[in-house]
Image (tube, rainbow, N blue to C red; front, side, top):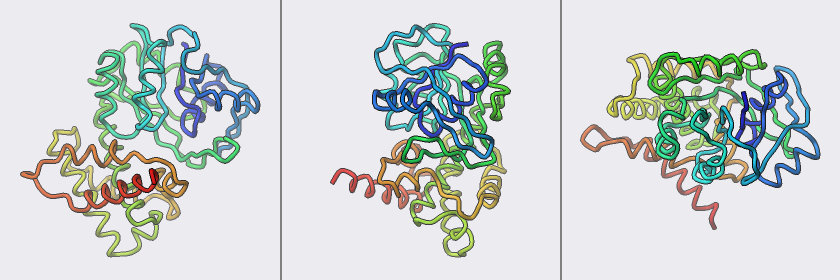
Length: 306
């Protein structure tokens, strides 16, 4: 199976590197500057699960490479329009597109661009970043990919993909209800990134401060209410389960969005929190904490353009 990993950053570099380590046929689609760095130093991973360093195959936009069997998208949502143009030459009628982005609306965009039958549901759980040299630094016990057919069930192609992803040095799960899993992750990420960026603090101090914890719980309730009113496939335990997950995190844990803000990088405000607000109906309730989070992020984005 031929894999194309779009992006050799913290997530694409980690999972793609592990597939290279296993011996799979992996190519990275990267920008010219990143291609030069990978040619000079190879792909380097420093992880609690074991280090890895090796040369990797790369292409940049427009280079001929033929169609791929599976294209894994590991980019930020604000890069998606360009990514869709970049991968078009490498998509055939049999290509599986596996996005590992946070959120939900990107699935609709990809299905409109490439057809519903080509797009799998997917998500990942991992704590990873890049250092100044471009090394992938991975620190979390979890390094998981979850994927499945968008409309559920198990297919021959997803079983084949599972065989190639399995035993690659990370955990992989083939889900029979991937939309449920995606919404559970979306709710967790939107609430965690929302509260940590709103308060500019890691998880521990927020949950340990009663007033701040109350704000988080209200934000979580607002997000769950929007998802439920929209018809998302979530159960009655979603809110309690998400809070329990937050409480299980290391007190020093920051959201990736918070780390991006600290580095002065763009954030996925519209893709995550803005998209949730676009689903909300005034007749169904008010969402003051989520609106405050979104306002905070939009002010930050405006400062990036000054």
